[in-house]
Image 1 (cartoon, rainbow, N blue to C red):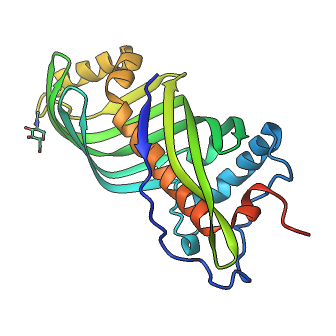
Image 2 (image 1 turned 120 degrees about the horizontal axis):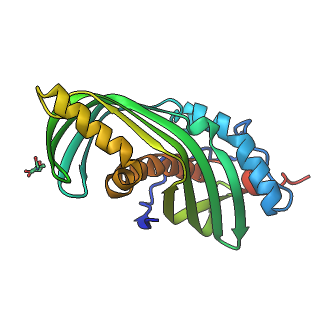
Length: 246
Ligand SMILES: *[C@@H]1O[C@H](CO)[C@@H](O)[C@H](O)[C@H]1NC(C)=O
């Protein structure tokens, strides 16, 4: 399990409303009267399909499919990978395993099946293999378990409303199901060696994922969390975590 700490940059993108009278929570929000783990789990599960569809008015981007035109990453070991026209599917079907809220700490665990497709360019060494390729990639990840611990700051008041603040979060993940890799032309102009390297990657999927997969998973988690941040900064607190005032 890896643990990566991320400080969330505090930006209020815009103030939703100065009067507060016309604010409407997105229809996928079903606030819990009391934030019990059972209610939070149910509410989050119910929110996921609408949340990943995106809410342009709130600056919440679509996450399923999650499209990234260009992503350059340096993987452990100094491998440079650029993913072009990347499309990730599956976040909308993540299963909420548990959710808990204590004071300002929120802990959520989800299990997801995701598929990443795109074109890639790579340079560097994958263990003993010099990989300097360019081709198509499809990476399937079954039962990717992600847990996120969020720390909320003191609520901020704006326009007569209170808003939650996402102060920081940490995420961990583990590969509880197999990861499969389909990559063409991993070693330029050597289709046979390329196929053998891909076969090696698949036979050693866990080691490959644990050794090299973290930056990719972290990018996905960070993208989800920046949308969570926007949601919290734009939808008043009472619409998110407790029943609206009678
Ligand atoms: C990876 O990219 C960096 C920065 O662009 C470069 O300095 C480095 O030489 C590259 N490494 C490989 C193995 O291509």
